[in-house]
Image 1: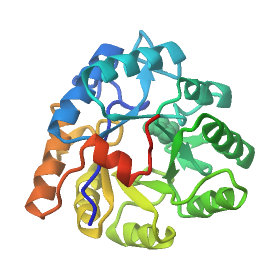
Image 2: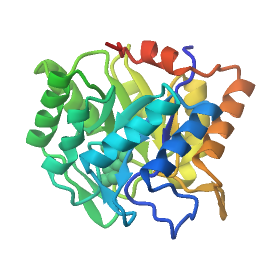
Image 3: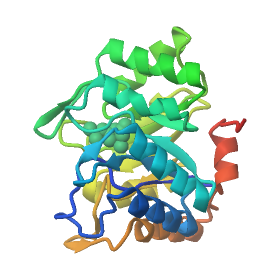
Image 4: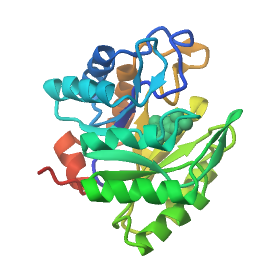
Length: 272
Ligand code: KMH
Ligand code: ZN
C-alpha cells in the first residue's frame, strides 16, 4: 500500500465558533492550524476562508493571504475549495482558482445538503473543470453521491479531466450518501482501477471511515469542516488533535504517513 495521505479540512463553511470555540476563522488562525496539522502528519490542507465576521467567503484576497501564510510555514499541498458555502454564486466559487493552487475541489453533481441544496449542474461542473485544466490545477473530485463518479468519468471522456482521477468520498451529509462501511466499499470499488481516493466522514462517521480507509488502501480527511468532536459529547481541541489520532492509528496498523513530497507523487502533482 502507498503511504497514507492525511488531508486536514480546517474550517469549511458550515461550522461556527459557537459550535466549537477552537474553530479557526482568520487567515492567521487558519494558517497556524494548518501548520500544527502538518506537524501532526497532514500533507494536504483543504482550504476555505472566512470574512472579518467569521462568515464563509470566497474572497480571493483572503485566500491569497491564507495561502501565503501557510507557505511561509510549510510545504503542504494547498487545495482550495470551489464548493464554498450553500448559496455562493458560481463566479464567487471559481474565483480563487486564479491563485493557481496545486489542487482544488470539484464537486461533480447536485445534492441536497441539510436544508439547502449544493447546486452543481452540468454546465457549472464543466466550466470549473475546464478552468482547472487551463490553469494546471489538479482536481479532487468530491463525491457526495455515487452518480457523481459517473459524472466525473464523463468529463474524462470529454477531455476535461485527466486520469488517474483522485476522489474524495464525502459521506454522511444529510441528503447525500450515508457513512456506513458498505457505502465506502461500494464507492471504492466503483472508481476506475488506478484512481486514488480519500474519505471525509461527516460527524460520527469520521473516525470509523478513517480506520476503514487506512485498511482498504485509501486516504483520509479529517478536520472541523467535517466533524468538530473528538468523541461523543467531547469537542475536539484542534484540527491537529484529529490528525494526530489518525496518524497514531495508521502507524499501529502498519501504514506509514506520506510527507507532502510523497503525497505529490501519489497524487500526480508536479511542481513547476
Ligand atoms: N460547504 C459545502 C457546501 C468543497 O469544499 O468543495 C461544500 C464544500 C465542498 O465544502
Ligand atoms: Zn470544503
